[in-house]
Image (cartoon, rainbow, N blue to C red; front, side):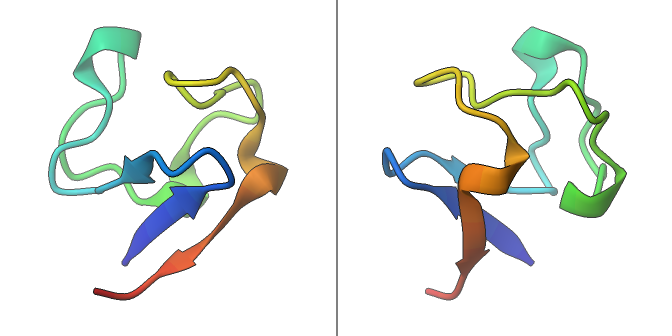
Length: 52
């Protein structure tokens, strides 16, 4: 499942966040607690499930 930040950036587990050390295939729930949105810097609490 994808998750969207309040800023509009979408976390796609198939892609991960390789620029910040998150490998493809990493579920949102498995992201480190200190991971933040690469677009705006907000933490995981600012994301909601995203359905296309």
